[in-house]
Length: 354
Image (cartoon, rainbow, N blue to C red; front, top):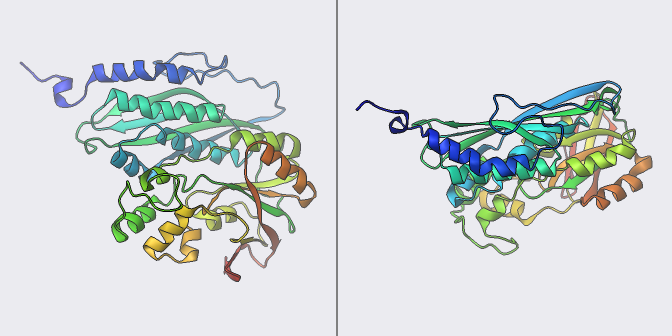
């Protein structure tokens, strides 16, 4: 007999089983705006433009990075999808956009329907948390391309904002306050350095129980990225005129991501003593003997999102964020500068970065 697709490495029946297993979770993210069911050639989403004078669509795409290595090692796949959604919806949120819908791409060497369903369940949970509909995706079985048990993920989000309410950073002024929202640990950035420090250099085990951590080391690192959509959008409803800049703290940490939204001749001065940093960052730093500056430009260091606000509404904005379940900290202030950049106060010493 001649070869068939399954013997070559691609199991169409496994793909069908995966779709059936994930169908309920995907459809749980759908509202009346979604006009198609799972399995179509394209996702259909009916826009309600009644609330917008000049609607602008905002798009973002990202992956999860080498955090996936931990999911493979621990064989735990039910939360990594939350990370995938968070990385894109938090990005478009930084421009004031409300997420509308999300699409995912999952590629693997050998399709395992139950594992695929776990991954998509996490994606669906992330979509529900950000009020986005999961309207489509692609599961690609690529025999011989990935190692056994491994896969890669990518995600794509589309949101909407009225043109007059786009957050660009152009309105940031001297004297504005920098408000940091607490992260849930590493989120999805810096894992190459974290793994090198913890497992290669210090020789920790993934199941290791370290004093000060709620979970074993592997589970602590796998904590999903916080999704800030509902809390920040709620705050923007009443205070968008006072919120002049938003930065999602991802790769590059506080240093690189705040700089991205600063107008010229302004600098951000932040004080690393002004917020609570989770124990995991200290463990990584000590394991790898990493200096403070390298930590701040690699990890979020306990701050996952930054709002730059007018000081006149500080009390109200902080109160609203707390009411929405956030832990906000005033971590710094915007000041004049000959160019633009960052001033980081670490242990009382200021380090300037242009």
